[in-house]
Length: 589
Ligand code: GLY
Image 1 (cartoon, rainbow, N blue to C red):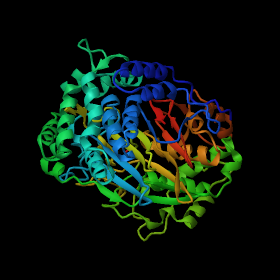
Image 2: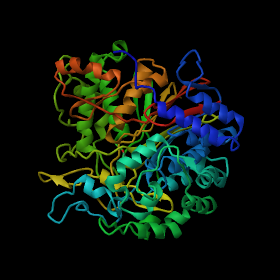
Image 3: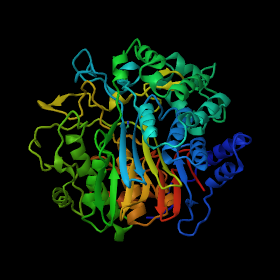
């Protein structure tokens, strides 16, 4: 297939120019030059379409967030320090996707200890929640769209606590200095991007005008959505951040903000149950990463409560039974990819959830088991819908599949510092604008809708059912790939339950097909979640339709809005790439 990729994003270029002129006077010339150059890359010979650096780099979904991160790195901060600044600025400038009202997963490569750490800041259900949480008065599960708007869908947020805990362990710069860039921008204002403006307009009749705080912030007095280019100030968020700069996460978990959150979720319809005790009890969990071999590499991701690491592990391990590198991005390769994804998503639906609450098979990444799954793939014919397998485990037949699909209101960033520490973090408030409930200048998540609304089917429990204090299953897949014990690639994406497809493809494109990181992210997507094979409209991927249909695939052409932000590390060279479908840039020096 031709490698024309996603068409150039004209709006992004204009937005970058606006951001650059706004930053005149606020930052030094290195940063301005970096932002000017970032859309062009620097023509470095190995990967001419990616941004090249040798010292440090940040790739995030908005140039102001990347710039804040680069500023911290330029001042000698660690990747962890930069992550705090990037996340808080993203909260302001890409408010629909992530922030302190949501949850996140972070992978951190600690270079001095040569150790990969993971931090789980996933939201939690209130302790009072039961498996009937999303059932209506008729004993039927609510429709997803009915459950989103209001306090019911809001999980106890984890992102701020994650940043605080991880920064305490791996930060060099004072916490206050890392909150400062977001305070400054909240007070000075930032230009609304085309993406944010269009997202506001789309969400107008999907609950974003229901509550006063969000309506007043995102819409003009005449009810129209804020136009791209409008300079938006957020004094309420500046006040929240000022408290956080001084007192850390305490105001949000035990203080003034906690009380406001508990009050805010008591919406008239879809009333939330979160209490002060739920917030006070929230804890960030450090977990073992999920790592597995893939050809000459070791791929590491996040384990439960996200299904990301395990499902990617299943897809790639199944594909290691085929010679994908020699096939390139052909119909043959995409057929095998789609079939492997179907098999993995079938297991995901059957077995994966918060492993602190549900037992999960030990053998989900067992190589023999996955070789037996690979043997189900016919290179000449699609299998249709895949059934879950029986990985080595005593209880394998006792679950019922969950079909809940997460929506794409999420963001991913990748950071490398001058010391060699690295962050790969995916962060979310669930769907665009989360629950639409705004407090303290930021949005609260609707992450609880990532649970299965049904508790059981045919008398068998669903692993991802709601339970008090449980974390909903996620698809977020922050990833770090190693070769000979050294990190060689950071990647991750938003995209709801499609995240796993986007991130896995970025790994295959860069590692199996040797693609320039930016070309890999530009490539049109092919997605399968154990159903139809989706081909990304407006890209070269649609050219696969006839060949995949001839192999028996049901093909759908549709928009596939990833937000991949990747950094490839080649000894001392860093190559950064930002998804052309969003506003982001890679910046480095
Ligand atoms: N809400 C998106 C995810 O957690 O995967």
